[in-house]
Structures are given as C-alpha cells and as structure tokens.
Image (cartoon, rainbow, N blue to C red; front, top):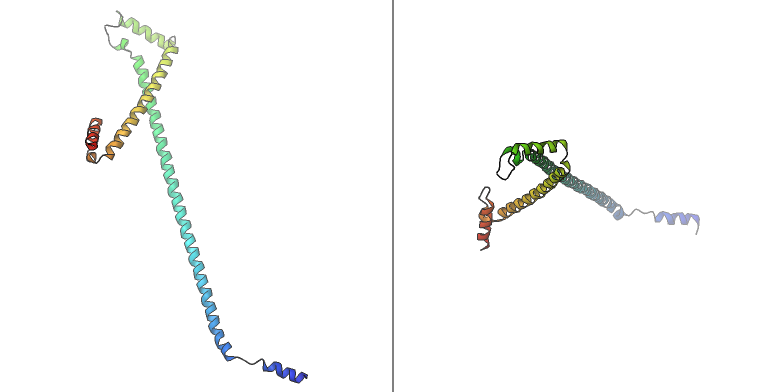
Length: 188
C-alpha cells in the first residue's frame, strides 16, 4: 500500500460516532451522580461516627460521675463511722472516768466509796493501772465497733425486708416487730 492510501485508510477510521458522543454526557452525568452519592455516603458515615463518639463520651462521663459519687458516698460512710468510733471512744473514756464507784453508792461496793473511787482515779491518772485499763478499753472499743456493725447490718436487712413487702409500702418507718409480723402475714 502506498502512503497516500494508508493515510486515507487511517482517516477513514477517524469517523465520529454520534451515538458514542451522545452517550458521553450521560455517562459523565452518571459518574458525577455516583461521586455525589459516594460523597454523601461518606459524609453520613462521618456524621454517624461522630454521633457514636459523642454517645460514648457521654456514657464515659456519666460512668465517671457515678463512680465519683460512689467513692464520695463510701468516703462519707467511712468518715461517719470513724467519727462514731471516736465518739464511742470518748464516751467510753468518760464512762471509765465516771465509774459506778464515783457517781453512785451501791451496796456491793466497799464501805467507803470515795476512798476507793479516788484511788481508782489516781491509779488511772498516774498510769499504774494503765496496761489492763488500756487493753480493756481497746477490747471494749473493738467489741462495740463489731456490735455496731452487726446492728447496722440487721437494720439494713430489716429495711430491705420492709421495702420488699407489699403490705408495708404505706408505713413510714415500721418497727422491727411490725416488719416481722407483716412478713409472717405475707408468708401465709
């Protein structure tokens, strides 16, 4: 083939296809629409992720506040029980100081109550009888603390029982006897 024929042959293939060019704007429009859809989807995904992050932050914040409140309540209970122990120790020390021999005369005490009580006070003050008295006071304080914890536990259980009984819901603060009585009625 000659070069002229070859050029003519190549030029004949450069014919414009009207269908191809008429579909091209539609394809471009579809591509733009797909890109917009993808962009909207990505934006929605980002918004959803942001919403989830905010919900998680709020939940973490609320959980932290709940923990802080719980720790605060525990601290207040410990401080309250510590002050109660201190008050009990103070009362016990006052009770030791005001022993039965000092304040009242009882027939079982010695014939001269003042001489015995004065010597008891002097011994306590000088520390002569301090080893048994201090140990006794410590044992008494420990026993009182244990007994107080037992009473508090029982009172808590009574209150829980009272709240769980439907026939005690209207009473303000029922006595323990009433709680037991209503429990027996409810059990029947």
